[in-house]
Length: 322
Image (cartoon, rainbow, N blue to C red; front, side):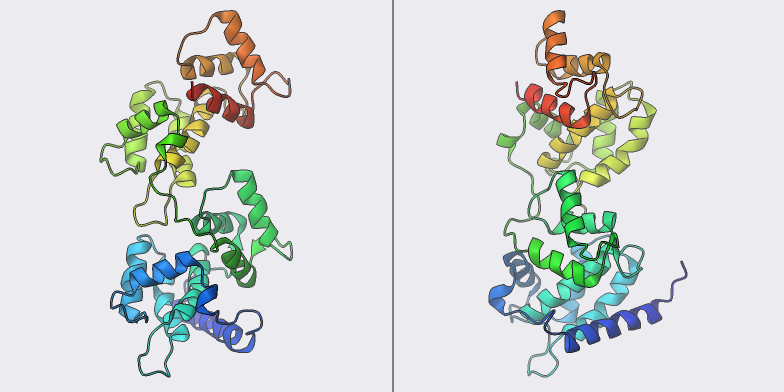
């Protein structure tokens, strides 16, 4: 795609000017009482002078730290977008909290619009939802939620639809995922996470995870090795100040990793032999053969002779907590 930075930025800003000035019924500047608490917290953190105004240097420094992999066109867009929303006709110019909330929705939209085509594909919208949601949603629930914001059913999320998604999702008061509560993660998984976390920063990097898993599983199938970066990217917190896999997210990812590891023929299900191998690995004690077979069949909820990912998730939760 040819890059015409100035033309694109001009069009984006002109579009925003029309939306903000002539369509206020759809997107008017909210009162401070209507600003999500997480946005208030972010504004106060970035307002280093404490004057309840964000200056352009404060904003530029903050987003570079907050989004270390910020796309070039978004970085270029940041200045004109700031100037469009800043309050120019007051004694102390800058961006107020209300204006920041207004601009932050637009900024996030462009940040997740990776190909700069003016709308979010469902994968792009899913990444945005993951960033804005106070808690990580199960994959199916996340997809369903994203689709619910696609009002016109065209399989993309435009700026107006994204604003509705922003308002609904950012209302949650919990922060982005942190290190996680060990009480909700099996103790064996906590121990594994701490062993893999060589830096001790309560985040697993891709390098730490790849190195540890290949050491832990010396006969790791090549397709599992090749799929590791994509699996890591799916579960990692890429949009927070300390990127990587938290304990909670590692627990979710490890479940998927084990399923793929024991799915030796990579067909998306585990046959009884593959499931038995998984059971043997996850069970804290070795079971007699008949008991093991009975237990494996017990996890085949629909009795189709194989264990699918959702059935394996139940098996993982049951066995890793023993």
